[in-house]
Image (cartoon, rainbow, N blue to C red; front, side, top):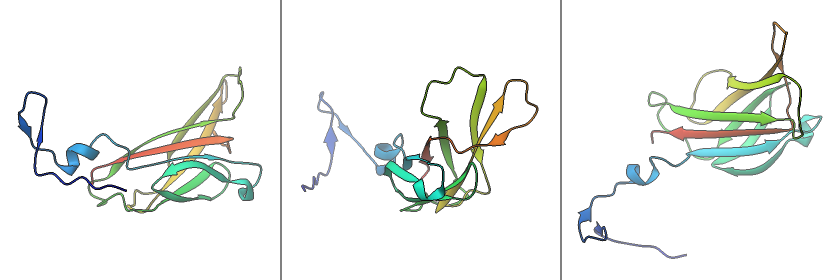
Length: 139
């Protein structure tokens, strides 16, 4: 592995620019995970991730991502993007959505996967085959 040590950076015109870590990491995800869920919690598998060391199955449609490194001070908060899929072609009118389940903490996040079929007046927690979670933090 190589380390790059520099005192200043210049653009192509030769103008020096100040670069802080917040500029470098400002648009980069602080953590993300793609996991698949089988019929039982023993089939839960992290397919790929960054800064997520484990996923905990907390019941039907309820999952908790445990971060390797804290996402920062609770007061600064973080934002999340989530999606889920059954992994196949779905021509039904079932809507899937995810929401936060519990409070923000720097070390973990709880998600709730739900579905609502056309005509239903209620939502159901669901264990979709694939779930994606991505987090952006002000660190």
